[in-house]
Amino acid sequence: MKHLFITSALLTVTSTMAVAETGMFRAENDPMAIHASEFIGQRIYTSSDAVEEDSFAGIQDGWENIGEVNDIVLSRDGMIDSVLVDIGGFLGIGERQIAVDMDALKWVSDSATAEDTSDYFLVMQADMADFENAPAYHTDARSTLDQEVAQAADAVEQTADATGTAIENTAQDLQSGAETAASEVGEAISDTTEQAQDMAADTMAQDGEPILRDEYEPVVDKTLTADLLTGARVYDAKDEWMGEVSELVMNDKQVITHAVVDVGGFLGIGEKPVKLSIDEVQVMTATDGDDVRVYVPMTEEKLKSMPTYEGK
Image 1 (cartoon, one colour):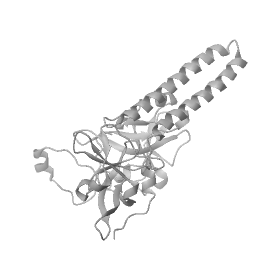
Image 2 (cartoon, helix red, strand yellow):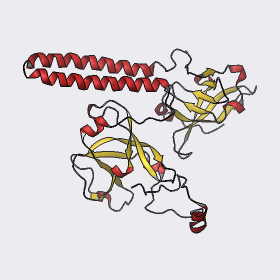
Image 3 (cartoon, helix red, strand yellow):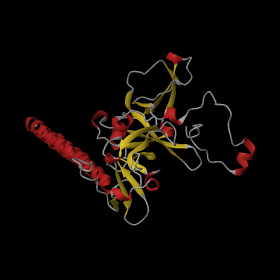
Image 4 (cartoon, one colour):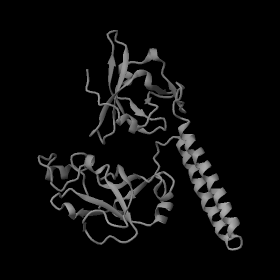
């Protein structure tokens, strides 16, 4: 599966010789090609049994929906290495992002709509234990706070595993007492999990309080300029990149009143422009450098739900 190329949306890395032989451009779309804008968002199903057939009539019994593709990881030669999937709350597993190797995914055609060659399923063979043991996917861009939250979540899961083992060993001699202890431990784990989630929520701007980031400081209003803001990357309160500032709106006194943020999409494709009041964003600059970031105290889903900015 790593030899699948997503056309029109991904830049394929080729040598000078390859360019000379095959040409640099394409005039027509391959009917069987998959576009990145279509591939992202595809549901991934898991089956404990091996999926031998290449075609099924609809979703089969025993297939579990684990989430959808929200990003693609490419190798340097332009091939898909893995896809990123959020498995939040799946079968009791703590919410986290995992990377699924492309070789683990099987492409299954939907024979119920045989006339539509683009209708397919992504299915992988995996058991519950595989997802419990799957490592969370990390990138170098993760903030220190995100790492601390992830470590706290891992600690909660380890505590739950250790507690569960202790309960099973004790149940042979004191079943009733073990069941009571299990109930109390479950409540404690739930409380600890909520505390871990609150750590991330505490970074959100509340009641006008500014978002604080290590090695960055807020830019005061009087220094805001079009050159400074245009093209700046936009992040949510958890330091996750959501888009970039594409345009600024000024009043008749040439004062910046709104920022237009392009959110979503992939490699510039499928982005949605939304208009935010300048009071809703916080501009920060690196204390030791020229990097400029814009923080918005809302999620990417919230931005995507806003009306599309059509311009003046």
